[in-house]
Length: 189
Image (cartoon, rainbow, N blue to C red; front, side, top):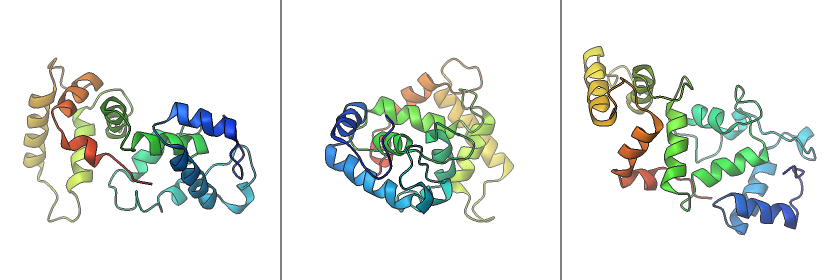
């Protein structure tokens, strides 16, 4: 789409509305927030990118245990550094918006939880997922046996084809039975 960081034209705005679940006002607000996060030297660049360190300062991400994974999943140009272009920023906000479909939300949640990016949630991914959700101190960390039992239970519930991993369709099946998922997977502008 290639808009400069300092301006957003009507054509770009219309295109963004068609390609996201965001309203015109939400896109304009997102553009303002994105521009405020940009390093000074990139304010007028057509290839402007906000570094992951700045994205992580957003109140919506500050306490999210998956904040680094979120940045890496939504960073399309350089997924190893987690920086965001404006398009990445809009994709991120769109996927977490109230208007995004369950299919979109579950797709991105699956990618966030797929720590090794192999297209499945393996035992290693599930262990990292549980650690992110439960690990705050040594006292709250699960024992090896508790972790093994929890992962076994997750796989018994989710692994329909019994291959020892959870694929996207299995994950979406589980999510479709969880009405709280959609309400918890959102960011409000």
